[in-house]
Length: 410
Image (tube, rainbow, N blue to C red):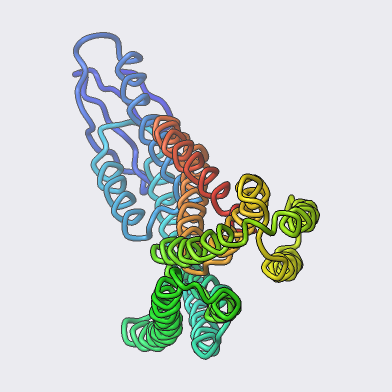
């Protein structure tokens, strides 16, 4: 017969384990070798239980294992210890499991307190978001307020949920504020569209009159009327982009017909027209000094003044006209392109869409970074590598979106 402090093997090969109360329990039989080998075998099974309990203790202490899952695992191990076919201090293992239950209960209480605190903080945070959203709903800073509201939505999504009733009530107020702002903004831009439509109709009337005057031979009054039409044109404002260029070409074309005819009649005034050419070349020189355009408002005012002086000078010799007017038209085109670029740069809806996309991509990148770090911390490198590939793709999209956003001035 062979024995150790926690078990023995009798002469029949029956293996016993000693319990805490001093009694013995049969855990198996051994016929394949010596009693020492039998004890060693059942001691190894005991060591296996020690390892499993140790692993569970580390999981409870170092991971976010839920109390329910932890207790399930503990009870599973307790059943194994109670009925263990092993030799060792099983009572000590049972006590370790009891201690682990207490630890799980303590952590559950800690998490309960922590969750209550987080919920309270989330409630205050969401209430603050609602108050700010309701203030922004009355703003007329369409671009900045719209961007801030989108930012508030991202912040809201990052906060924990409250109880259903509270969360729904706060979200209803938050959503109502956003809807109110959106409705006011749409009304504002609808008004701008209406203004552009009014400008289109006004310019249609100016074009019609300009075209009706194009064959007039009443040179002085008609030329004066064309100058008035030009002043009215500039005062009207811009029509929709798809109509503006066509209307302008028709308007200028009608003037060109009239002034070309007048030039033919005044062909004998070549000397005077030669002087006109010198004056217009000087104005073209001045106009070209405005390029490249760095201050659009100042350049527009300067060009308007030059153009008024240009119109007041009269015609130049026919063969010289395309070149000198081409120089002014080139400056005018540059001015229009700069105006269109400024309009695109300050378009709040396009800027808002770009910022919204950038915000969504940034949120996705931040989330993926956190998931990669979590996977690395848990030793799940396969998942971390997979998430990293997805992160690289989102980061590339974000970089591209940020470059696009720079075109709007940041």
